[in-house]
Length: 199
Image 1 (cartoon, rainbow, N blue to C red):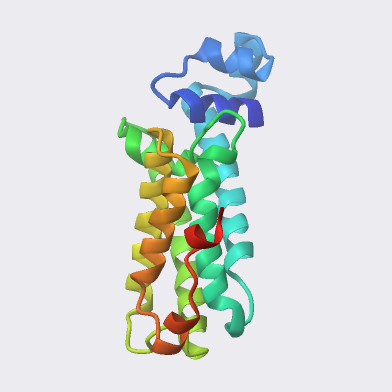
Image 2 (cartoon, rainbow, N blue to C red; image 1 turned 90 degrees about the vertical axis):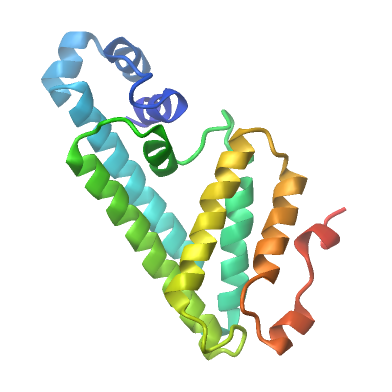
């Protein structure tokens, strides 16, 4: 299934044929249809499995005590900047791919993508609130709006990485985005740009 998932991530739903799927999964057409019914059902299954891992992965990055919440928000951006370049095939997120591709899918796939984005948004919002409680982010800032900003930067950096923007440039984007957060004076005084600390 992971090989099929990577094929969908590489060429998208519309650009992936049943023969491509059968080859990636090591199955004949007959076996493929017997196991999954059709291409759409297989896509939904691989997308759902990917979303499960993605949600759990970001929750693990963002969950923790208040005193390290700001570091975890920064880690979210740093990992976002590295996501495509650290993949051996330079593949992006399947969720982003679904949204950007913009083809007609089963409504269940659209619902699963919305669920994944909402889940990551909740994890981010809770981490923002933790940073606010610790005095690193302005307590008057809307935590959900800050989370949405971070998600937008995350998705944008992924698209730019796939378009060829290198890691050093992405690190600078990460720094500018982080500096644009509603940091408190204390947090801002302690902040060191990642790009400045990287030779």
